[in-house]
Length: 272
Image 1 (tube, rainbow, N blue to C red):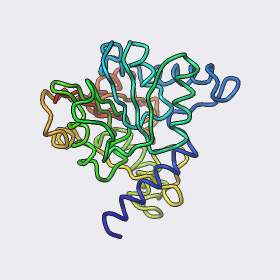
Image 2: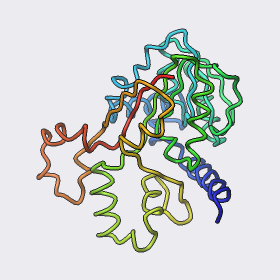
Image 3: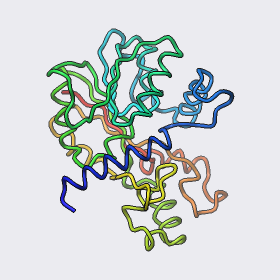
Image 4: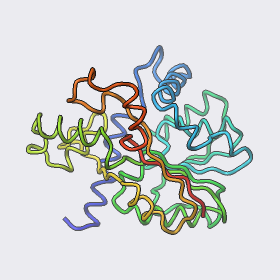
């Protein structure tokens, strides 16, 4: 399979994955995709990842034009909108676009959203004060093209905010490689690429196999070489990430001390 076919397959797998399992979804407390459901998704996201606002400062973009690439249900874009930003979003999955629109509509907030691929954004040069993408670029094989497009549509001194899966995370090393890969023998039945795909809820690494790439701090800086003032950080560690190590052997203090070295995400805030 050539690179063009591989890239096309990755897009199709991503669309299938998130059409069947919308990103960030949780069981509804009442009517599915009502305002109450969207608020429950939001509540659980930031209880689970309370560090996100400390990194990205969602409320710091009042009056600014912000683009999110791969907004999913729109939970993070909602935070920018609450802070007074003019929000735009692009996604390749129809289900995500539908749900993000409904999420914003149910809150009485405004979002300009369209079906676009990040490798070719339908915006003029210097269109945005900030571009945000969390948990998306690690699913794109031709990621360098996306970064070029982000650089193009950002204004001078504009802000880029990214969150990607971290290569040296406890989750990758312990739960994925040791527990799921070796002890459950998934490495031998579906291979490493298939194993990485099972990170995503609902993916089996065979029939549903989204592309996943992990990043180190250095590879993220290299990816963003055309940007400046890289503020790179590792975040999000939970005792469950050390499975199969028994939980009673992992103290809360240990998790706190290792969070900036073995967390699940590597993030970067940079400038054009």
